[in-house]
Length: 110
Ligand code: SF4
Ligand code: SF4
Image 1 (spheres, rainbow, N blue to C red):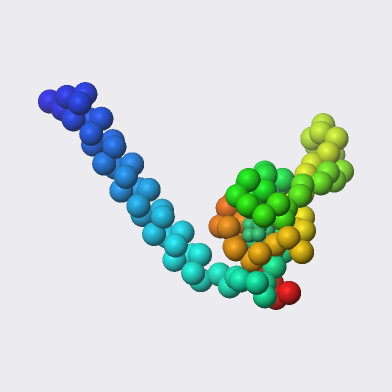
Image 2 (cartoon, rainbow, N blue to C red):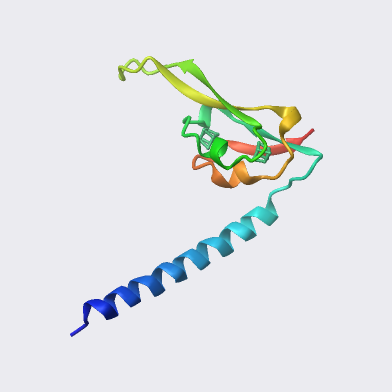
């Protein structure tokens, strides 16, 4: 029978395997996105759910969230949030593209 210690070790090894695999995928994805000083991030407003992930990863204070009116009459919430890019502050690092769970951000030419 598997002991608690063995189970814990197995869980740690599995967590490491998953983390390594995800990091590898992110690195491949990162290299496939164009970036650099001649590019700037762009948010497709319809896809943005205001989750704040892009703002958290951006080291350059290039993202702000602003409030918009809720469009759905089904939800009793006064406002929703959307992200916007401060173009002059954006360095084209692409981190926000990787962080966005809804693929709302893409890199465009400056
Ligand atoms: S590309 Fe980099 S600098 Fe520009 S908004 Fe995204 S995270 Fe910030
Ligand atoms: S991570 Fe994506 S969905 Fe979340 S606030 Fe930023 S642009 Fe919007």
